[in-house]
Length: 150
Image 1 (cartoon, rainbow, N blue to C red):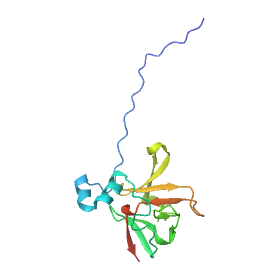
Image 2: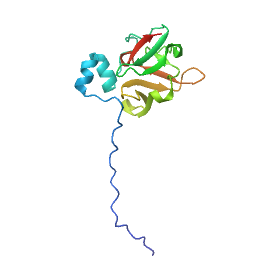
Image 3: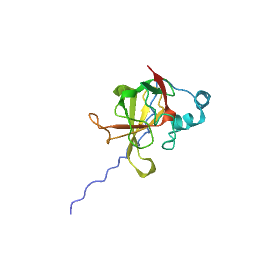
Image 4: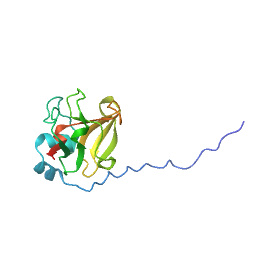
């Protein structure tokens, strides 16, 4: 009978990775002073506003939508479409560098959370059921964005 030698090595411990550092970082107190209570819950604690309740779900003016936390331009108004979900929906971001995509396993689902890549503000989620040519639907909380007309 052949035996396999047992390893005497201890398994390598996994060190938690450092959280991402953003260009714009503030304390919770600073964010609370800047944002209203709903903006703070959504942008800084990943809450979700109720569908059909945000100020931009049915807003169709020309312009751009910027991050409520740092002002980074995120979405052009001409990429907005009515997805029927009750949240502002966009087919693409201004460019791929402004959005951070993070796996979200909350609530028993696997989704892709989207955050502002400059300040880490939670924006919403992106789904693969949008219109062509991207096929993506950025489902964004109104409380996470500000509109600027052009």
